[in-house]
Amino acid sequence: MNSFDVFFNIEDLRWTAEISAISALVEDVKKAVLQEVLPDVDFLSLNKDFVVNLCLSDDKTVHKLNLEFRNIDKPTNVLSFANIDSDDFDDMLAFDETVELGDIIVAFETMKQQADEQEISLKNHFCHLMAHGLLHILGYDHMEESDRLEMEQIEIAVLNKLGIDNPYQE
Image 1 (tube, rainbow, N blue to C red):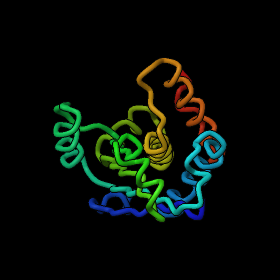
Image 2: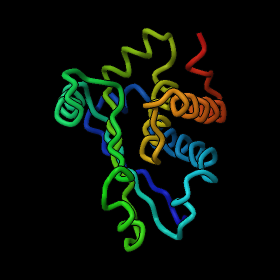
Image 3: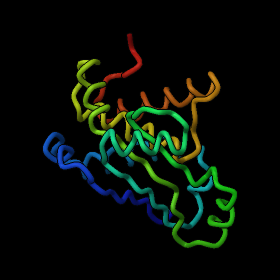
Image 4: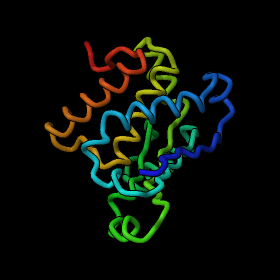
């Protein structure tokens, strides 16, 4: 891997008002995720540049995308659209110098509501959702119980690197 960049777009100004130094947070989460998954995600060992697009948005936008792509008529905290799921992904790996891995969209209101309900900081919840989204982009999922447990263990390890408590503890 030559580089791994996260380009982000802030669609809702509440993001920068509520979470300071968000670009540094994104960088920290990215580094922690890569430290955890590097040996296991084969394509990251290729001599390529990788890009992920992050959109810091709102419930209205995420609701629309959730309905359009997942047929679920409500907002959610984070959506990930992973190019690894595309039929063209192997061609991208073979022929493109820069490989776009996909898109992550986070809904501000849902994230804030969940943080309030769980009595955790917005910053910590954002780091969790960012790690979760990146893992999806890199090919992890939680459709099967064993996959869910693996993904949760990676998230716990990533958050631990960032000094954030295990979000799955009761």
